[in-house]
Length: 325
Image 1 (cartoon, rainbow, N blue to C red):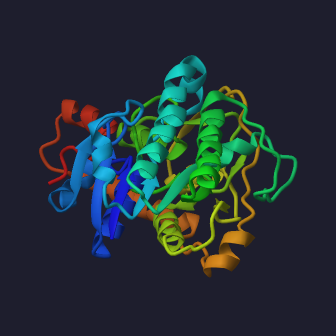
Image 2 (cartoon, rainbow, N blue to C red):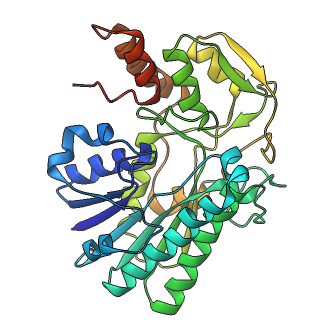
C-alpha cells in the first residue's frame, strides 16, 4: 500500500511513519521541516521517500499523490500563543494547506484521507467527559484553523466522493516530542527545560487536568482507522483518565516555577472515547507513569552522552536527535 504522511518528520508523524513502514507499506513523507526534524526519521530515512515541501503552496509535490492509497494528514502549525500573534500563517498552513491536500487527493484519485484533528475545537467544554457531539467553540486561531481543516475535508468528502476520517487528539506525549518553542506542547517544553537543568514552568497553579495519551497508543489507533469502511467519521482519541499537571511534574522529579495562564485554555481536558473503543476494539495501553518512564530514559541518554559541550547541550535542547548516532 502506498501511504503519504504529511508532517511525517514531526513528533507523531515520525512514529507513524516508522510503524507503517514496518508493516511493509510504501511510505512518502511530505514535510517542510519547520517543526519536523530529519533526525526523527534518521534511522529509516533511506527506506522512505522524503519530500521537503510547504503544503500551503500547491506545487510539484502533489505529483507524489499519484497511485497513493491513503493520505495521513498530520502537517500543521500548532501552539496557542503564536497563533494569536500570527493568525495568517496558521490559516495558510492549516486551512489552505488542508485544501491543497484534499485537492491533490481528488485529482489523483486517492481513496482515503485520515486527518489529525484537535480536541481544542471544543474550547472550554460544558460536558465531561467530552464527546464528539460537544459544541464546537474554538478559543484561539490554532483551534479554529484545525477545525476549519476538518470541515473542509468533510465537505469535500461529500461533494467529491472521497473517504475521510478525522481523529480529534487529546494531549499526545512521548519520545521525540518537539522541544523547540516557548509555547510548544507542555511535555516538549518540560523536556527541554529538564535537559537544560532548569525548573519546569507550570502554567497557572498546576491543578488543571489534561488527558495525556502516549504516542504508541495514538499510532496504534491511527493504524486501526486504516481499515475503516465508513465515511464522514469523527472520533475523539484520549485515555479518558486525566491527570493534573502537578502530578506530571512530580513524576518527572523536577523543581518547578509558575507562570501566568494563557488565554482560552480549559481547566480540564477529558475525552469520551467510547465511540472509538467500541468500533475498533482499542484501548490505551500506556499509563502516565510508564509513559514518563520512557521519556526519562530518553533524557537519561542525553544527560550521559559522551563529549558534551555547552554548545551541544544548547542545540540538543532545541533538537535532541541531531546528535543521535
